[in-house]
Amino acid sequence: MQEIVDCLKNLGQQLDSEIAAATGIPLAEVRRCLLELSKKGGIMTCHAIRFIDGQKIEGMLCRAIGPASSLNPVRASKLKNNRHG
Picture 1 (spheres, rainbow, N blue to C red):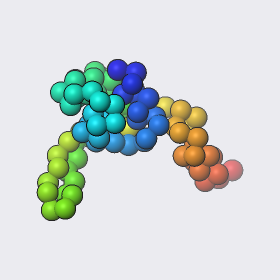
Picture 2: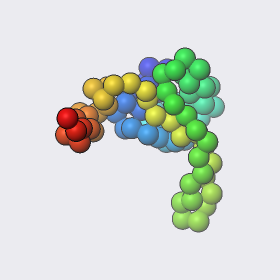
Picture 3: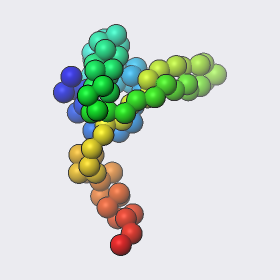
């Protein structure tokens, strides 16, 4: 499960199928882990539909929950630079 969390922290928001491809974990196992992580409050999920080359792709869109420091360094620095005050 940590591999999935690391994937989301490194790559940002991803579809369940993209996480499966990036980690090499079967999609059914990724979905099971995502539901468990969501219940524990470690990630945020929603149902998503994308159209790629006219093909409808449905999946679970996910992102890690946590401070900006847990994001990849490039995204974290952009967030810090965009804060006011």
